[in-house]
Length: 135
Image (tube, rainbow, N blue to C red; front, side, top):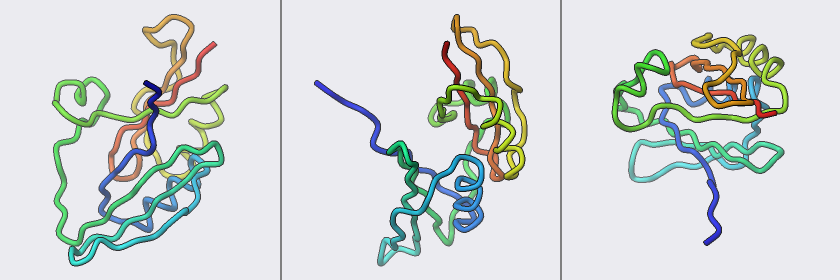
């Protein structure tokens, strides 16, 4: 059976700010804007030139959920921990994300997986993002 990720969904407090961050940091662009009526939910599907997609939701009455502040803390909670982007060189991607408003959680470093470098960032709302570079 062939299978692959179609998209990742992320609930955010500020849809416009999240869209701007993921555009500036990682090069996503808006594919579709929508509303989930009759619910007070607006959404955006963002797409990257390589075809990966990120769906953002903003619910008027949303509340902050359980969220790990660091990768290790996130592993200690069940459910969503992080998502990862891969790149040939994570250094420029890491710097672009910082310039767009991300915060460093783990700077580019050797991964526990042989032949891999990784880094962790948090987007402006605290969602963890891993960057992965494979030899």
